[in-house]
Length: 354
Image 1 (cartoon, rainbow, N blue to C red):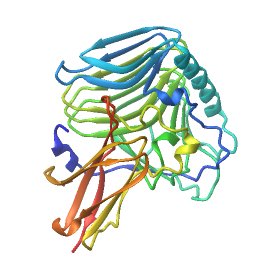
Image 2 (tube, rainbow, N blue to C red; image 1 turned 60 degrees about the horizontal axis):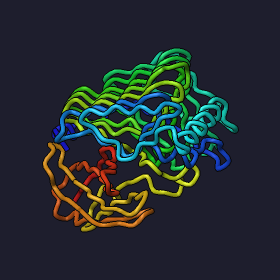
Image 3 (cartoon, rainbow, N blue to C red; image 1 turned 180 degrees about the horizontal axis):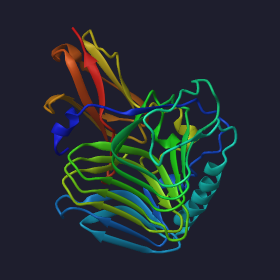
């Protein structure tokens, strides 16, 4: 990964406290929609920085359009208005409707300002049902961060009445909440930009559905961006990687439905602080593949590395932490499923004490 010095930044973030979602929630990614990283209406445009470092999207699709424009980029699988893309659009519309008024939702948190605010009061860890966060107009953040904290069954839905623009904004998931359980229901255009040297994440599913409004994802600086899944039901999708920063997906194409993925570990390290000889990385593989775990100190130097072949499901990898000096360490889990489908986690941290 480029510019590892960016890993040393502090995790300064605002905090949402999220309740636990009930098993009966209607927020389910259909089996066709789950196959896509990117789904558009008429056209998808993918642009990478150069032929040596192409932008790679594992699965993309359009319906009813059939246009895929590639510049220094590749889509390993492209569904051009075939039955999978058509069904994916139908499931996207169903998801769009489900996200408007989900059954059993907790009382809605209404954003007073047009940004993800610095604080939201705790609503209790045992409440069932999705948490709704509603922006009456645009939702726009620049050079800030948000931590969403919840258990694996928590579901969070951002409902944006007009457009969403996130510029150099970091969304950090904590406490076990899954990327597959975070949604952005955006009426108009949705834009996510990372244009400096910091590594950021924007996990979750973005879906918009108003006449020809587009979704645009841009990585133009040295910092990398881990994003989720996005579907524009009536507009185009543009993904641009123009700098050395790497764009990767936190939700693999072909992932389980939201309901099924709750049993899959979101990834963590224990114990933290580590005081003995052994520390354990817990993570989940969507399918059999090779896992690489790189551990860095706070100035970006590689401190340890694990590489192994793993099967699908929850997995564990151990490391001798007695060889690490006391301090804070950052790590990235990279899952290589083959055929160019590489999924990198967000930056996580743990502490070593002797």
